[in-house]
Length: 226
Image 1 (tube, rainbow, N blue to C red):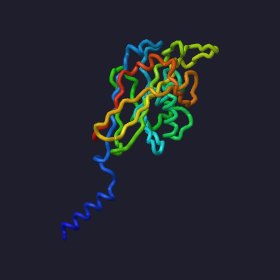
Image 2: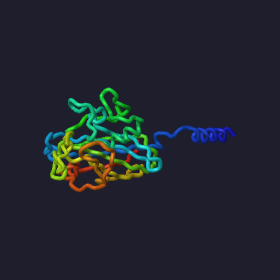
Image 3: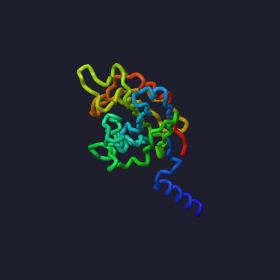
Image 4: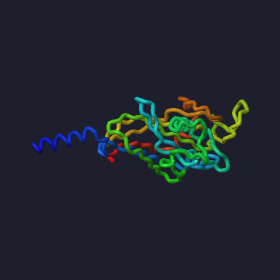
């Protein structure tokens, strides 16, 4: 009888306690960036980068990683650069309820996932606490400043000037993955944003995008046990 009571108590606790670490997994993002590509831009700086997840059932989004400048709006003598990572800014607005842009004074609740812009070839980021078996959409948005080309020049045919020195607009990769340990996914170049001003528009036409497509030579997402 005592054994049965103990078994009942154990089963009851298992039913009411929250999910344990064994029931969640992590995603690991491994990215190789190519210095010989981004150094050809007018500024020669590595790209701004943001990574986020989307729940396909609810549309809820979660920032995984974002470079410090975009996350805080601290762009060497100016507050905010709206065209740096505009797709991520829309995600940030959804996460925070903010209607503006990240600023140094209002550096928001992404401190735990911000990182300095790095010249290291390999960028690593992780997303812990993912329910095992969960299906997710993931996105990476990158932007190299002042990487002008014939399709995205400093001054357009209509005399429109690229005041932000954006050049090729931000490039967005998209992929899908199921959170089962051992699963591996590689995203595809999916869309871009606008060159001249912030609109939040996602443009699924990559014509004219050149070196931006070569900046990352590897993007791999792996699921592993926590």
